[in-house]
Length: 228
Image (cartoon, rainbow, N blue to C red; front, side):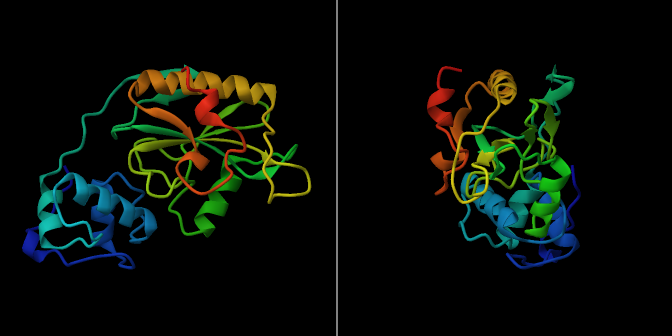
C-alpha cells in the first residue's frame, strides 16, 4: 500500500496542481504518475468520489484524502495469454468497457506505438492513451500498461481498456472517416476482443463514437462485435 502521511498534513489539490502529492494520488488511482493534475486525473478523482459517497467536485481535500488512505491495491492476477506473441494480462482495475479506436491516419500509412506516444505526450498525456495497438500488418503491440487508466475516451477512461487499429481515414483526408482495416487487422482485432471478453466477461465492447462525439473508429464496432 502507498503510504500517506496524516490526512491533516496533506494539502488540498485539484486540476492544475503539480508535484509529489499529485504523484501519490495518481499512484493510488492507477494513473501514470507524471505529477500533473490534468484532465485524466480529474476524471479519476471524480469517479473515486462518486463510488465512495463523496462530493463530486474533483478536488482532493481532507475527506477525499481520508478515503484514499483506506484504499489498498487490488490483488495482482496472473491471468494472461499470448496473442501473436504478445502477452495479454488481466488488469488490476475493474473493467466494464472495451473501447475500439482508430488512429485517424490515412489508408495505407503506417503508424507505430512510439509515434502515437509522442503525439499523445505532446497533447499533455503521461503516455500513449491506448492499451493495445494493431498495425496494418495485423501485428499486435502493447501501449499503456493495462493496469493504468488510459486516455482515450473522455469520461470513460477509469474502467475501460482502449484498443486501437492503425488507419481510419481515406487517402489524402484525415478529416473524413473510412473503415481502412486490412484483413489481417480484422483477424487480430477479433482475436484480441475475444480474449479481452474472456478476461472481462461483463465488459461491453463499443466504438469510441458510442461514448463520445466522434466518428472514430470509422465503423460500427458495437454492432460488429455484439456476438462476442
